[in-house]
Structures are given as structure tokens and as C-alpha cells.
Image 1: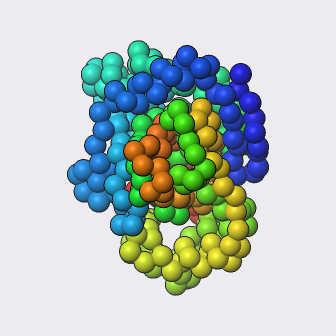
Image 2: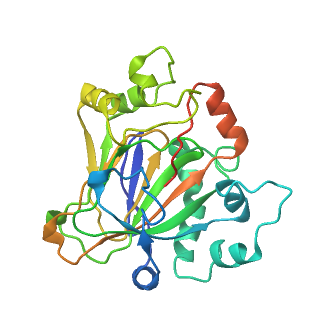
Image 3: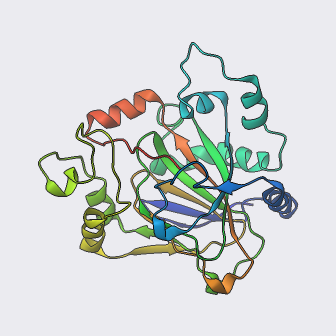
Amino acid sequence: MVTEVTRTSSFAVYDDVLPPAEFQAVWEYMQRTNYTSVHQQMWAKTWRLCDGSPLAGPVLFSNETTARVANQVPQHMVLPPEMVQQCVFPTGRPIDQLFQTILQHGDDWSDLIGRQPQDWCGFTTRAFLYPQGTGLSWHLDLGRYSGAYIYYAHPNWNVKWGGELMIADDPAREKMGAAFDPHDPSHTSIYHPDKTKRFGQHLENTWENKKLLETGAGRYVMPKPNRLVIVSLGCAHCINPVSAAAGDNVRATLTGFFIAPEAARAARASQGVVPAAVAK
């Protein structure tokens, strides 16, 4: 039975998300999945140079519409049959139960991620492994997203092992998610000249550092097994590096994004929210 642990205007946390047998099946799936470095093709700048090299599995989709939007496939084009068969729910894999659980509870999170179908048309999922020494620096999820989720699929965790999800307080969220101002030097330093694509804070994070330190407070979520976290749009968050104390234990997650349809993205853009350039 899914148990709500805590809920704020930025995120919600749930425990006992899957029954024991299904949770074990997901953990076995995590072990069977093929992984590559997140930097296999090039530097994935969502991860800073100090974040190490986490491992990622294939991206899966809750429906064909999500696959089409996420892969920018025009409506007049047919999705490749192999993509539909291998990557679209139902996949025939143990993680289908997690897909089903999220679909069943989607309306419960409308205050965080909006409502389906007007605010999100579906969601993605991707397996990630964070071994010791890896993490994910502070960032925002904007652009084509309506929100995000993290499901912890590892069977054991110790509080000494790190890997916590860190979430900035709402005042920091409002400051970092504010509309783009081309006359503000602290904003223009992170945008391309056309002011529509983000450079990000990958090599120099003066703007990010200033905004987060204005409040300098937030909350953390332990990576407890069989736990699901829902994170709202534009909420500044990061993953603490996994400690050397973890040894061979990895922070194993199924992470995904609720994908906003084109109309919802256009509405946000008209209100001054600039799309993020890098998807993870």
C-alpha cells in the first residue's frame, strides 16, 4: 500500500510503493539492464565535471504520445515499430508495475505536476546507477517537462552512504524560476545570444550560487528503498554524491519526467519561462 510520508508545495514522498515481490522483480530488472555512461557520446552537461560518471539505461515511455513528443517526431510521421515494441508501456518488463502505479496516482499530484492531458501527456522512465563518488549538481527541470519523479530501486541503503535528494526551499525556487530578464547581467550570462537556449552553470555558476545562497536552506530526502518522490516544475534540486562508505552498493533509481505537450510549453514560454536546453 502506497504511504504518503511528507508533502510540500515543491515535492511529495511516498513509501511502500510496490508490493515486496514486485519490488524484488524491479531490483532484478535493474541488475539485468544494460547501462552506458551518461557521457558516452559527449559530456552530458546536466552533470558537472565534479559529478563523476553515473550509468544510465534506455529511456522508456508511458505511451506513444510521450515517445513522439520526447523524441520530437512530427505527427505526420510514424514511430518506428521497434521503438513502440521495446520502449513504450506496456513493455513486458517488471517495471510495468511502476508505470501502472504512477498512472493510477497521477491525479493525486496535480498541485505539483499539473493535470493530464493538458499539463502532461505522459512520462518517461530511465534506470540510473550512481556508484560511490557520483552525484548530480544543483539544477532546474524546465523546458518540455511538467515535473519529475525518482523511484529508489536498490534493496538496501545506509544513512552513511549519502546520495540524498536535496531540494531548495520555495523562496529559492521562486528566485531561480523567475522569468528571464535580458537586461539582468546575472541572467544574460547563462543564455545564448538569441535568449532562448540556456548555457547552464556547467563551468561557472555565479548566478546559481547567488540565487541559492539568498535563502540558503532546504530539505533532504533519503534514498530509502521502494520510495517514490514527485518533484514539481522549476524546483531547484541536486543529488548528494554517494559516499565511499557505500562500497559496491549503488544508488539505483528509476527516474523520469512528466512531459508537457506543445500547447502547455507554449503557454509557459508566453509567460516568460525560458525552456531548458539540456534534457537528462
